[in-house]
Amino acid sequence: MKTAPEHRVWRNWAGTATAAPVRWCRPRSEAEIATAVKDAAGSGLTVRALGSGHSFTAVAATTGVALDLSGWTGITAADTRTGLVTARSGTTLRALGAELSGLGLAMANLGDIDVQTLAGALNTGTHGTGARLGGLATQIEGLELVLADGSTAACSASSRPDLFAAARIGLGALGVVTSVTLRCVPAFTLLADERPVPVEEVLEQFDALAEGNDHFEFYWFPYGRNALVKRNNRVPGGSAVPPPLPAWRRFWEFEVMENAGFGALCRLGRARPRLIPALNRFSSSALSARTYSETSHRVFVTPRRVRFTESEYAVPRESLGHVIAELRRAVPRLPHPVMFPVEVRVAAADDIWLSTAHGRESAYVAIHQYAGLPYQDYFDRFESIVAEVAGRPHWGKMHSLGAERLAALYPRFGDFLRVRAEADPEGRFGNAYLTRVLGS
Image (cartoon, rainbow, N blue to C red; front, side, top):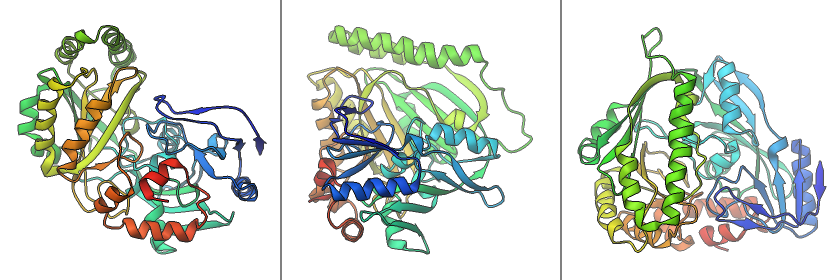
C-alpha cells in the first residue's frame, strides 16, 4: 500500500469543496484498507474514502487520512443465473457497466453520469429515473465494510440487518465500504426518444409520461418555452428497433452540440450576463429530436464536460407542479440570471433509511448554474420553495440543511444515528459535512 504524508489538496469536480489531508493512502486490498483505518486511529486521525469527487458537497473531504480507492476495483464474483454480482467499491460505474455487459448483465437503473465510484454513488444516494424503479441503493443485496476498529463486517437483509439498512446509503459515516453485492438483471436494450416539447404540455402530461415510460425525465430551460423530454423504454427481445446513433451523429449531438457548443454559450453568458436569458431561450429553441436504440448503460449516461454547480431535492411527486410553478415565477426576479436548465426525474418509494425517496413516490428537481456564475440567491430561493413540500436534499449536492431539519424529514434518522454510534463510537469516519447533517 502506498502511504505518504503529502501536501496535496483534494478538490471536487465542481470546485465547490477542497481539503488538505495530512496523509494519503492507496490501498489495493481489504487488508490494506483495514490497516489504514487502524493506523489512522493510532495517530488520532479521521478517515474518509475518496470516490471520483463528483459530489458537489464536501461529503468526502478530510483533514485526516484520505483513502484513494482507485486501485481497488473490478468484479470479484458473478452469477449470471441469479444476477448477483459482487464488485470492489472503487470500481467506477462506467467500468462496471462495461464489465456487466460482457457478462450479459446490467443494472436495472442508472443515473446520467457514470464517472462516480460504486461506493461513492451508493453512499450519497445516487438515483436514475423511473416511476416503478428505485435508486441505485435499492439494487444492493449485500455490503462489506471495514469498521472503525479495523474489523470487517458483512451485512445484508438477513445478516446484521440494521447495519445493512443504514449502510445502503451511509454517507461513509459507518465505515469504509469495501465491496458491494448487487442484484443485476439480464442485459437489455433501451429505445431512446428525445425531443423538444412545450413545457406547458410536459407539465400537463407529467403523470402520464412518468407512468407510461420505463424511464422518463425532462430538462426545462428557465427562459425558454420548450423542454427536452427523454423517454427510454426497454425493448422486448426480437423487436424491430431503430439502430444506434451513427458514430458521427453521436459525436455531433453529444460532444459538439451538448458540450462544446453549449459550453461556448455558457462562457459568453458568464462574460456578458445580460445576454443569458436570450442565450437560454436560444438553447431551448435549438433542441432537436432523435430516436435510437442501444445497450442500457450507453443510453442512461450522457457525457458532461461543461462544469456547473448543482442543488437537487426530492419532493413528493404530487408536489412537482407547485415546485415548478414557483420556480418559473422566481427565476425572472433573481438578481443574477440562470444559464443552465432544470432537470426533473422520478422514482418509486423505498424503505432505505436515508434515501430521499424513503416512504414516498418522489420527483427530483435539480437546478444548476454554470461554473463561475453566482448561484447562492437562486439556490436559496429554490430551498425555500421545496421546504414548503418537505423536500429532501440529495446528499451529494449543494444544500444548507442541518441535522435538526433533516431529522424531521427522515422517519428513521434516529435509527441511523444509533447504528452509527455503534459502528463508529469515536467518529473515526467523521468530517465537517457529517457534523452538519448528522450532528456531533
